[in-house]
Image (cartoon, rainbow, N blue to C red; front, side, top):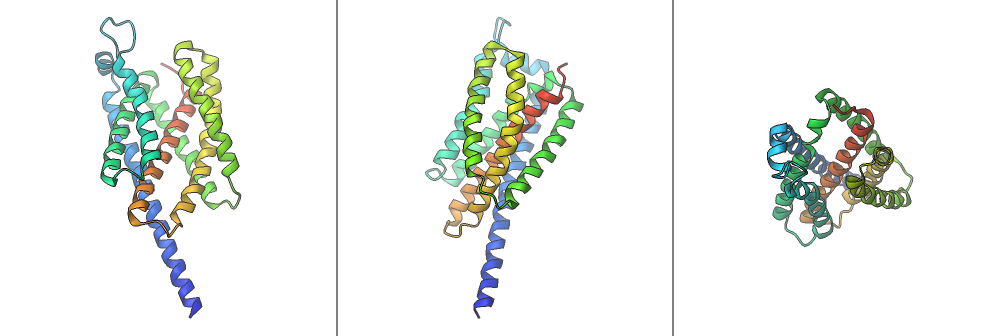
Length: 238
């Protein structure tokens, strides 16, 4: 009898884990699709000049900085306050985030050739998939590695903001190289965290749905940042 119950319990656990990751990847691919469509639509010189260049044509407009930095605030809000927000509101914020990221990413359409963007996307997909599988299957605890990588990421983020004004090619190159290692490593780390979350049967259905959305958001963020790091290394500016 116990053997039968254990088999049923194991089957149920596998089923809810499968459903959880199905939702996680649905959110991730949904966000990539929304951002990709908007980036393609807005990635024209006419759109960029009209909305992201100031009236005197001497610099970037305030709207550009809003589009560039608003996703950071939205992402932090969703990750830290998901338990206080309704699933419906989280979904709205998620859609807004994806759209803003699409507008922000539209500028790469003006800098890199379409073939370079496509090639880098597929390279990113392969690297991302490999690290995701590694993170899901490894028995090694990646917690310490994840904490270290997050500290490096914070340093990269601050340096990246500073480099907007410094405009150092060397600093940009170093940030891109670090980004490849940081975002691939964080992909493995976060997949391990998601695996533990998926197997937590104490979670309510609502909490599980919220965490699937936040998980999809995190994987989307890691994918996009890995893509941008690789694009800076592999692509050549027009």
